[in-house]
Amino acid sequence: MQQFGKVAVMMGGKSSEREVSLMSGSGVLSALKSRGVDAHAFDPADKPLSALRDEGFARVFIALHGPFGEDGTLQGALETLHLPYTGCGVMASAIGMDKWRTKLLWQGAGLPIPAFEMLNDGTDFAAVEARLGLPLFVKPATEGSSIGVIKVKQAGELEAAYYEAKKFDPLVLAEQFIGGGEFTCAIIDGEAYPTIKIEPATEFYDYQAKYFRDDTVYRCPSGLDEATEAEARALCLTAFRVLGGRGWGRVDFLMDEAGGIYLLEVNTAPGMTSHSLVPMAARVQGLSYEELCVQILAAAHVG
Image (cartoon, rainbow, N blue to C red; front, top):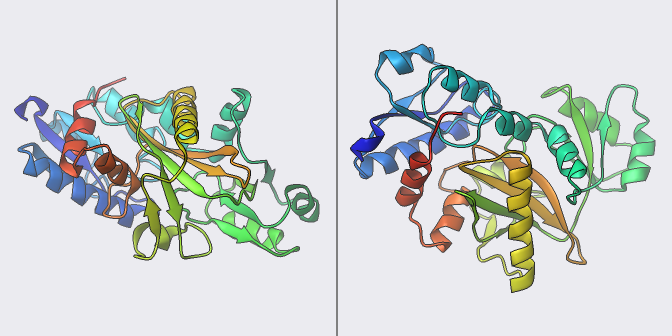
């Protein structure tokens, strides 16, 4: 493990996902240390990135979530410092953090996505409700972990949901509800891992259901038949590549009642907490949490 040199596990930060990032980073740090890696916690909220060079770090494991951590900003800074880092590069990170532009790219590539519309102060909200149908979801374009996401169930509720979501991001979208189930697919080193079906006990897969509740049900294998599983994995891998993804990531998708698959979003710095999905899929693939962390670290590179 000395080949990696001194490794910074980047965690914390100042985004709304700081709490989750600290949980992810702590797990990664313990895993790497258990395998003999010279790993250390590094919180950019406490010290400047120039300290990475001053303190002799040779490689960075990014466990930051949200803006600055997975939006291309940090990736660009690390490239300027010529430090290898885990996960996607600048372009894929920036696009993947933006749900609107991700959808535009997938749409342009002919990949299936739910119908959506961008909202603004002048939107005819009743018309959008009519076009997309109810229920529907309202989402800030550049937040993760379901922060700011609202399920609109009754006519006339969309406008209030828009203004609430706008508190998190000026870019807000309304998205068609697809009711056949929510799934995710981990991508590691160009390979799509077994899909996971997510069955939250809450109204939808929100922040609490993702990280803190113990009543969310995860099914891996997901229960899809062999042909559909293969189709879903291939589609998620294509979706990841269209965005320029590399290293590792996770693609979320929905299914309708007829078995149609719709791409939802991509996560270029997935969670690595005790409730996280990539480690779950890795276990089914025969990879322990510790082995997964080392494999992700080994793929770190610049540019």
